[in-house]
Length: 323
Image (cartoon, rainbow, N blue to C red; front, side):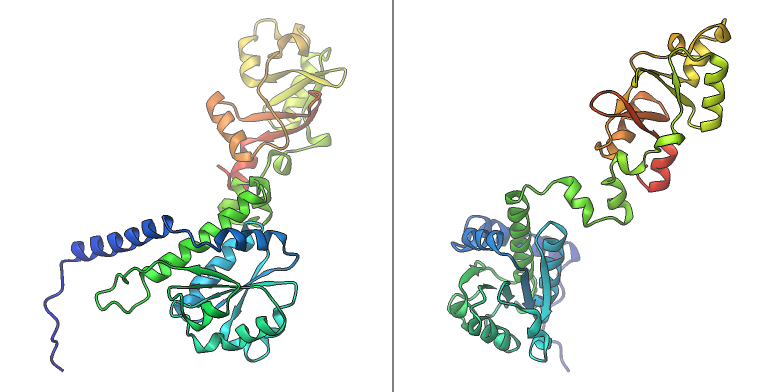
């Protein structure tokens, strides 16, 4: 077979062409928000069910990613494979749900049964497509039209620009829903308990040592008693309390600085009266930043009344994967 194509372009030229083509399309879409985008966001916010996303081929792959982003950011979402829907999976789509169907052409045959299902049971349906007059867009309650933009591939057929636009639209949808729900970092961690991200979103309260594990002494305690507590608890510090409130912290550094006549003093006399403390709801990553900035290895955790409720050591952060 004779190759009628001209010599391939330099790789650097292809790189620039693809990125420029897709970035220009994104800029075009940013300036042309679909009229139904905001009403669709409001519809999802008012829904008591899930957002059902469906597509096939490349649109299906993008749909799965959109579904995962939505589900991890506070919007209950579920992906239904368009072909499997015709063989029983339509049962996953209930009348409490909302559907989002993806087809660049708007004429994907595999979507017909799920479209018919949404129409039969009055399930709100949104469509993402680049063809306004397509069958899918005509059937939709909410039309999320992609701007007319060329695919980035050399033959103009491989889904490239169109999938990028669809993915970006899905991201915009997820973020709009996040902000409308005032989705917070602690909410995010609920759906990301594993891996490095989960560790970064852990709170001090989830990692700290409590109860009998805390190295606490009364302000009037002798230094022999204080040293025994510091040694047995193994944190390298002792929290000094008076009437249930933290009034100071003794560290190894404090012991060295007051070595002269140390054993004749009481704990309250040796302690640093202005220790660095943290609250239980602080992110563990933020606690680590405070440790690094102050060059300390442990922190006492206090409540609103300055009562000690826990202790956090840098080793706890290392074990959890925060550091």
